Length: 157
Image (cartoon, rainbow, N blue to C red):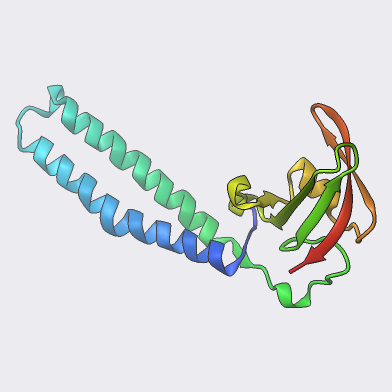
């Protein structure tokens, strides 16, 4: 049984674009490389041919994996999510109790997490610790460095 993957509209569009790019640009490129290597003669000792065939296999495996993700993709409907608690797609402003540093994160599905753009997975230690909390609550986050405490300052969509 395949695992259901949750996506925002942006994340789903990115997945579809990646599949399209791999199928329409990368696949023909590798086919061309295989053809050129085949034209060079003896295939039993042709390293270019072997490398192109291996790249083709990896590409096809990647396309298959992405298509499987797409087949099991579910779009997250944020219109019915309660803003009083932290849920997926919530943008949460938190304050570290110990050093008073404030941070802001948007909780997303694992496959859309990108710490550089402030998107963390709901499956990450911080994400798990924040889920279900309300403004003013203290979240105890278990990290390799020990337990960290964060106060929920605000929750927005």
